[in-house]
Length: 70
Image 1 (spheres, one colour):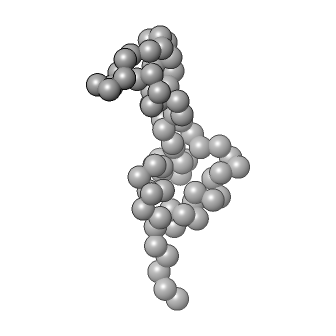
Image 2 (image 1 turned 90 degrees about the horizontal axis):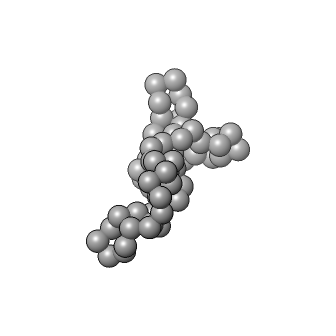
């Protein structure tokens, strides 16, 4: 049988932890961030809340695992 290829876009967007959980970036980070082309909007609380990675929803785990070749 041929080898499965990892979907390159998926591998850039998701990370697998040591315990096997799939992590994704928190949504809502792009708009209102401090970029050169756009003014800074939103509170500091919003920026802190949207920082970091969160665990992937249970409904999406099987689809992402298939694309990652796990």
